[in-house]
Length: 89
Image (cartoon, rainbow, N blue to C red; front, side, top):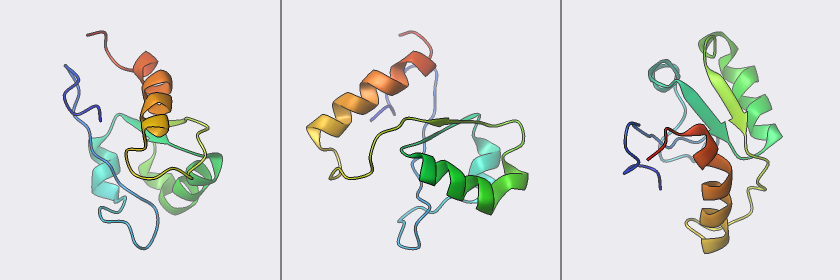
């Protein structure tokens, strides 16, 4: 959803065993800023990849992970919570 935002590159990844693009040490090394939907996601990420998160900022958006992919309500919530961390357009 933010792939066209000027000045940034984005990747989406998941922590579940069924994730199409699972979080990896390489992906974390590539990232400067990491967004998670819920505190439980942040905790899982920290537990599994603690040594790979050094120097990385992990931001919990406090959005329940209960929305369907690209649900308009989810898109609006993501926009409201993420934009403040991105470079101005």
